[in-house]
Image (cartoon, rainbow, N blue to C red; front, side):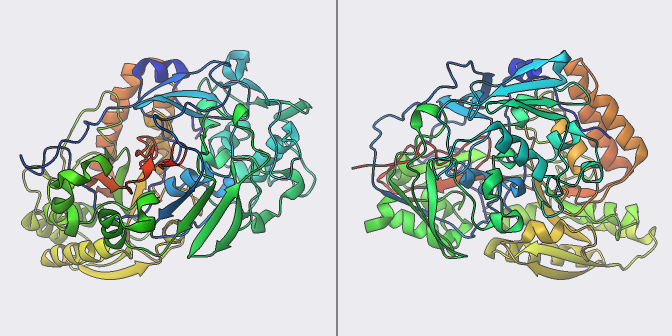
Length: 594
């Protein structure tokens, strides 16, 4: 199947959300309430505004970035979070927290420039603009800006850009997006090409000079300039490519360089003297230094930021949301309102069945009926903390969304145990045992107890298997994993159902996001037909219809709760806001107040 995307014109017309990093950090903790849900005493928080994205011009692509009000340059900012990053090699980036961090040290051909609250433009990052299509969208040409350099002062060239794409075909690259690789070759892109290390190069990427890069796709892709903005397509210097080792010691093209990295404990960043703000319309890079500290749970982080003492006044967190224990206290404290950020999740959240192991659909349907949605919601903080969606596609980011509820989650959110028992009695195994793998966080420990209790009431024995939080996606991403059920988050890479359904139900390989291992020729054919539609309204309707059909005929997953991030920052942090595209606090506008 050829993975394709909606045209750029359609993206601009709907003004929808483009996601540059599709994997959500695994079960990070509890989110918070929408404004007003905590009761009349809760302080007012600015209402959520759906983001709009337009395509910028060459002028828009010039630096420096638009400064936030009251910006101050200098100082040291501290970022506190739970986990270190599994990957820093751009080719391995597909988790939102990792691609967000990469903004500090890596650049892409295109990127998103913030022009106002929830307003963005796709602009040239390393490129002078968002690219020039020709041959009906099969060919894309980019020109590199003058003055873009690596941290050692050597120029970034078109050969670096070509090399960066070619190396994503290598066997050691197991994560990261695969759209462009497939457009250049075929769906099984690693079979078509194994990377540049044996001397073989891709004829479909041309570099006529040091500044020009030309991509030649097999079929038209009018919105390819959006794909090039993904963090997984960041640039790596050919001369400094250390293959597997690059993941631990990347070379910077961004505003900061890594001065020290104590794995699982801290990262220290200092300014990159060869980054020029005049070439960068995206990154403000206002602090002189960054101190990233790991190993703190959401409760510890929240308490530190609530106390706002000493150095924590200049601290923030990329993704630690307020946990259930502090939710009502934070929402009800007017003093915290100026430091409170919130945003609904743009992701779909699922509990995937491993179809290689869970072969009986009746058992999968029984689990859906028995699923304790309401109890999970309460564990995460109640209705103010999580909504209970019923569809695969996210209603917050799906144009033409149409709801359905196959498993009575709306009428019986606590689960329908009797219906589950009925289905199990009709199945191949009325008393099955399943292995449930989960991300070992405090909240997920509690959620696991709830899931186990509910399913065992229906007659399903649950063997709970905790997984290391840092390598969670690596573990569930193995095609030969030994789990029956596990959580996974996904979001559109840019505004199209074509970047959701054909991906989570697409190619099966280690690291690929088809965590259910769904392989169905009829579904694949329908996805190809839908992605080829030119009528956008018809395409939207078709994706929703397929959403329902997949759950009816196959049932590859349980739709999980949809969370709303609620995050604090220190009183001397300026420019902080949750990026609606990545659902984490973006570093580009952060500054330290005097």
